[in-house]
Amino acid sequence: MSRSPSDNTPESDDTFDLLSQLLDEAGVSAAEGNAIARRADAASAPMSFAQELLWLLDRATPGMTAYNLPIARRLRGPLDINALQRALDMVAARHEALRTRLSDASGEARQLVDAPKPVVMHREDVSKLPAELRASALARIVRDRARTPFDLVAEPCFRATLIAAAPDDHVLVIETHHIAVDGWSLGIINKELADAY
Image (cartoon, rainbow, N blue to C red):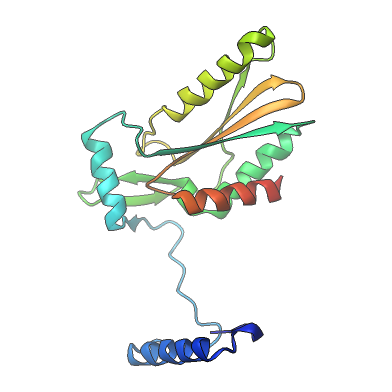
């Protein structure tokens, strides 16, 4: 384990020593470079307890959208749609959770990670509407996308919709499901998407 030079406070030294002791007692080496072995790419993985609960709720109440986690971002100025598509693809390729479907076909709740592939970016255009109708049409589309249930068996927990309000004014709606992400994760996805774009 490594510490930064600013961590040389007595509290952090004590914490580090305690952590090292606990790892030693558990038979885990705290040496640099010690890493968790990567799961075989083709292998499915069991769901966590929290995922199983959300999975059971989803199975018991088809069409439920209470656990959808949408974010909408206004994009003003010239938009390079190809660069946006590449950014979405990069983020999805980087995070297996965004490419994961769920199954209980074998009698056990499992996560199935799809290979990276282009993210389907749905497109909507309200730019041809009269100006006084655009805002309400935009809000309706964002609301409808947020209320579109995920089919956790057939699709990953990551979708995107791009709405054109004008040639230099767009809204990007990223739709995720809480079975794969949480509020903290959304911030990371948002930052990585901006960096990749």
